[in-house]
Length: 134
Ligand code: CO
Image 1: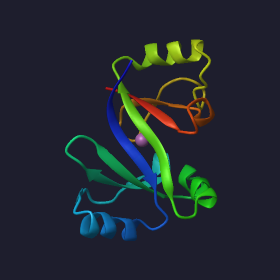
Image 2: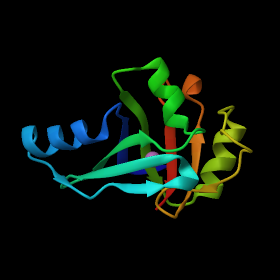
Image 3: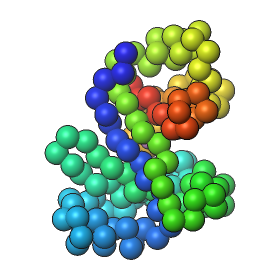
Image 4: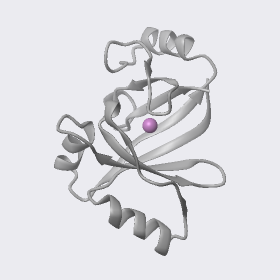
């Protein structure tokens, strides 16, 4: 069911420091910082030949990244995103299999303007999983 790795998201406590580190130490190709207020994040994309990394920094008071950073002050891997061909079918199959879909259990428009769902990390080895309609 799952296809390509779309991205790995890393929560960072200092976006400028992370940007400098990825650019200067790792020699990465970065996009400019972008605010996504609907998702409570400021994001920089690290463009890799086969996928991308998202550096996530909290934006606004209700940011989900803020609470993550309170638990993980040095930052850390926040989620991993796989592509699926048919998100509605994937959602149905996962729910039937006992996995918990976060929120109201139905696809929402994600940070890239495509439908996504998030799966409860406790059901997937402690890893928050995002599934995005390819
Ligand atoms: Co994501």
